[in-house]
Image 1 (cartoon, rainbow, N blue to C red):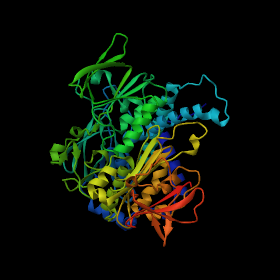
Image 2: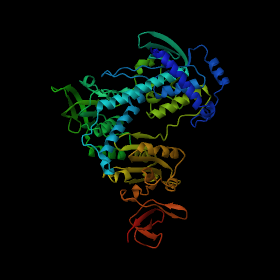
Image 3: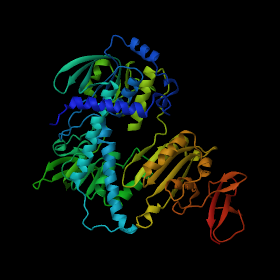
Image 4: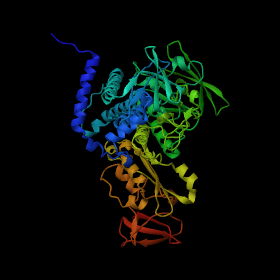
Length: 590
C-alpha cells in the first residue's frame, strides 16, 4: 500500500533536501566571496548576529518586508543571512478580470518572466519561417497552440511560486499571506486571506509592494478590458487586439502578439516610448509597422462596449482632428497606460509617509521620511522600475541595517532591454538628455547600421538594425550611452554596461577587438559621427592612427586629402578639414 504524505510534510522534507544541497554546493567561504557583497558586509559572524538580536529586543521581528516581489524577497534573504529575524507579508488583489497569482511579485507572475516566454515563442515562430533557408523542410500547416503556450507559462509560474515558499521556509523567514497596514511606524495590522487578523511589530520595515496597471476612467474599461496582469493566463487566444498605451508594456505586448500571428493595433495619445531615445523609438515603431502592427497615435479611448457578435466596440477621439470620434472593433483590449502602487492598502497616512505622484520618496539610502521605514522597487519615486534594480537595492538595505555596510545604490548607467521583435537594449543616457546636459558642441553621436549575419540567407530587412554611441566631445571622449537595436540586444549590452561604469572612452572602444561575425562586434565599428554628415548605412572600415592618436570627427566641405598609403583601389584616405583639427577616415575607390 502506498503511504501518502501531507503537503506540509512534503514541503518540509523537500526543504531539508534543498538545505543539504545548498550546503554542499555553496560553502560559506565561497558565499562571502560573491562579487556583489559590499566591503563592509563581510561580517556575517556570530558576534554580529548576537549584536543584531540584542539591539532588536522588544519587537517581534528585526525586519518586516511588505511585499514578496523581487526587491522584498532579496532584502529578506540577505537580512536573514546576516542574522536578522525576518517576516514577509504578501497579498495580491485580484484584477477586475479575476486574475490571481502567488508569491514572487510582478516579475515572476505577470511581468518579466512570462513576457520573455511569450517573446521567445514569437522568435521561435520567426525561426520556423526562416528554417527553409537553412535547409530544413517545414510543414506548411504548423500553427501556434495558444492554450499549450499559456499552460507551459503558468506551470513555470506556479513552480516558481512554490520554490519561493520553500526557500523562505528553509531560511527561517516567517511568511504571512495577507495585507499589512500601518498602525504606527513599528506596528502592522495583518489581515490574512482567511479573514483572521493579528498585529506584528518590527524594528525596521521595508515597503516593496510594486505597482499595478492603471485603468482609464471610461465606460466599459473594467468590464471589457484586460491588462498585462491578465494576458499571460488568458485561456483563449486574444484574436484581434488593441493595445492602449505608448510605453514599453504596450510595445512589448503588441510586438509578440503580432509575431504570434494576431492582428494588433497600438493606440497612443502622443509619441511612442516618449521616455526613451526618440530616434531609437521611431526605428522600433517603423519596424513593427513593417511587420504588420497598426499604430493609431494622438487618439484617446472614449468607451468600450460589447457588440452583437461579442466583439468589443471601442470608440475613441482623434486629438489632432478637434476630437473627431472614431471607432474600431476588437476581440481583446489591453490597457497599458501606466502603473500605480496600491498605497492605500498599507494605510500610509498613519505614519506621515511622504508620497509624491502615488510613489514613495526616499533618500540615497532607500530611507523614507520615517527613519526606520525603507522602500525599494517600483513603488519608489524617480528610480528605474526594473527587477535587477529592486533586487540590488533590497540587498544593500539589508547590508546597511544588519552588516554595517555603507555602500549606496548606483542608479546611473542601468542597462535595460525592450523585448520587442527586434530588441532594443541600452545603457546610459539618451541623445536628447546628452544634448540637454552638455549642449550640442559638447556631444558627439557615433552611429551606424549593420547587417546581422543571420539575416543574410533569410533576406530579412537589415535597415532597422542600428547602433548609436553617445560621447562627450572633449577628451578623453567618455561614453555617455550605448543604444542597440537588433537580434539578442539584451545579451549584448550587459558587458558594455560594465565598461561604461568603469569609464569607457571612444579610444578604448575603437581599440577593442570585436568577436568576429557577431552583432556585438558592430559596436566597436561605429566610426561615423552625425556631425560628419556621412551616410551611417555605408560603414567605414576604421579610423586611421596618426602619432598613436585615433583620428575621427567632423567632416567639412573644404577638406585636405592626406593619403595614409599609396592610393590604390579601395584605399584608406585620411581626411582633415582646413583647420587640421577635425578628422575622418574613409575608404574610397579611385
